[in-house]
Length: 364
Image 1 (cartoon, rainbow, N blue to C red):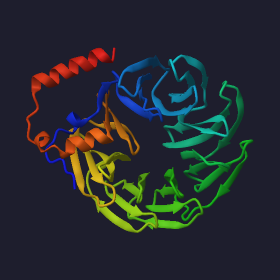
Image 2 (image 1 turned 90 degrees about the horizontal axis):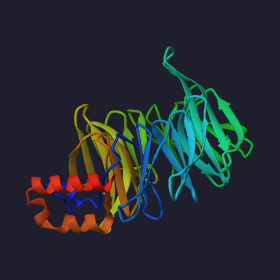
Image 3 (image 1 turned 180 degrees about the vertical axis):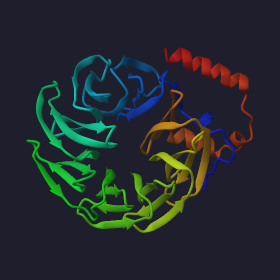
């Protein structure tokens, strides 16, 4: 089994770049492009060779991305914004009611979720799903009292996991009409994934249920996030516990630690799938890389707070509080992990400083 020991995990990265501001969202394309969005609205694309393709400035913090062909859609502050994928030119921009939280593609249309938060009541008052054509024409708006905490598209329906008071699922048809569906518990849905074989939803009471309303697993703490693996799924609990389950919900392994801020299936390391976890203790960040089947720790890294993470079998990227964007690639990471010398050689501070200067020039 490959292990990293004290290897400098950043030195094993295929690409280290900078957005120039705190990263808030990431997107990876099938072509190998990587797009980062920032807390102050900057959006930057790097191609598969690591070169900057374009940089754009949006109206506010970028929370989510979706792409369809030559269109790139982003939720930015209170707005949904459309860009040209190839050159970053802004095509249209519409303000929503409340914060623009998420965006997805469904039936050749773009769907955005917005929510209105009331500070006095410390709760969300109203949410809405907005349907636009790719050209930016509003098709319909569906309003609801609950906040959608997760949204994804299936071949037939737009699926939304709901908070209080309704909870459960909302299924939207092509006209925006809502059909509510109960899940295994009446606890609010906090997260969800459209997995390889089934839909899974994590609830505030620690329940994991599937799209058919069946109970899959139950834990002591609320489910903060879910990720798919080739062996099943992994839950991050609000107490910092990371739990891996097979597709039937049976426990495979678990580890406790500080708060989990991001987690995702990562690139293959050798013939094995990996899982990446970002933790935060209030002052320091920490990245863990594990074998997704056995839970064995393969590598670790001390880092500032990680704000975004996106991965697949070929690569995984993280975006950090200091604007750094790091991408690991399967073949290179596997090779570095097999080189015993990489865990023993001290980091050359002069070489690191030169590399930082070169990155700064490249990202301008």
